[in-house]
Length: 574
Image (cartoon, rainbow, N blue to C red; front, side, top):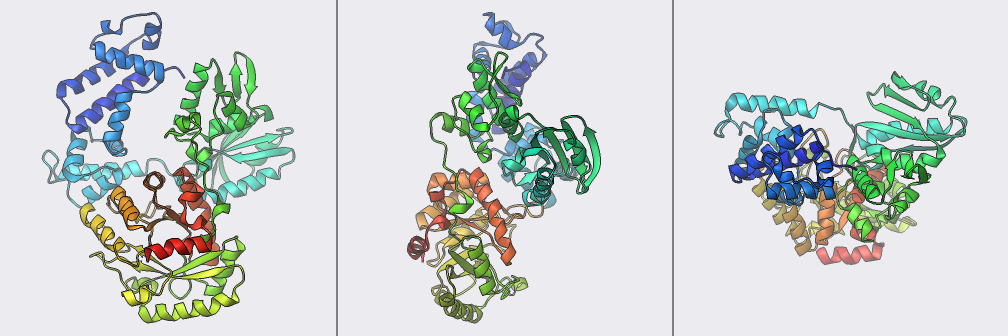
């Protein structure tokens, strides 16, 4: 894909922003801003000038160093300096620059003085009245920031993945019933298993598309038809979710699936590869001049570019292209790899079904073992267990297991991690269990240092096994608490315990990036449903999707082990 002047200007602006946040030399910052302005206003493409052999140093504000950087961006589509700066600052910090009223100087102050790195942390700082004390801010500025963040958060409505799945699954089934329809696929961020979805992109192939658009537009849940042509239509469902349908030729189906699955950054990367090979790739196929050489299936599209097929969950331009080139793509974990679930509740606390019902439901979806982990007494709202009630449930599980065929119940607890890092139940009862799942359910607003130390102290407990929902977030309802996740992951490795990927669609916690971090550090992740009823094991679908986005393979996941192998690992932590 050709690099335009606007692309180069955007790179230089981001470099200047990041340098200013870091407090770099003002003259260096100004040089990048001036270069961005020069290139943004240049009537001729810098790419074309370089092809003609022109010396870019003749342009205002472009010296030898900046000219070399322009050449690098034009040749590779990347800037090594920008990539280094992105590694040096938290990835989300530049998102703060998208908040109206926040320029680099203010972001710098917020980052250095309040350790604000994300929009969520910015909102908390403004809400808690901590911003007004900074020099150059004040109460009015703090209020404006709070309003700007709230407006930013509601700018585009997004649907949780599990909610979007309800509409996607129903629409897929509906379209598959339309006469002549052969293939139906939901693409976009839904197929990449993003935790939230802005809209749905659906692709259809049909023997004859006559009637497909009309049937789609007449779907019962359609509230508004935005457009309807011969091969494409856009509607808004009554839920507010926009759905775009495209009817494509079978010869283009794979190319369209790649294109509409995205992400945008991934698609740009593969178009650049195509360009270097003298090819053109778009939603209709891969072309050499006017000849289509691939397009009917995704694998053929990638193979024509010298790449193996890349799983949709990885298509974020976060190293998957390089891994594919090097033959190092992970063999991602699949739902069928799961052998058990290590976090579930019954009606003894805040669940809805009995021990036996939960065991049989877990068996029905193919699991070999299920850990029952009721809440502990500190969580009074969930009727958490005291030592006596936990002991009675242990006895009940011991009596029930011989009656079960093909499924084993493990004795556990989801024990509260108290503010001082101690656990909510005594050692003598915890020592009887197969595993102890520790969880933070209170005091979410502790400082980063205190929250981190609290969790580290809990993990040092001799009976601690798994850290539940490590970030503590509820999507769109509660921000994650402020914690040093890398330090926690490394402590888990030293301690020999594990982290949970909570598959509940309100949580999906760990984040995908944190899963990848844990993988790199050699810490096993347990994909758990946090089921409160026998129906909730369906949550595991979303947990596996999040794990795949985090590059996790079967061996990176604790509960892909057999029961005997799992027990050996658990015994080492208890």
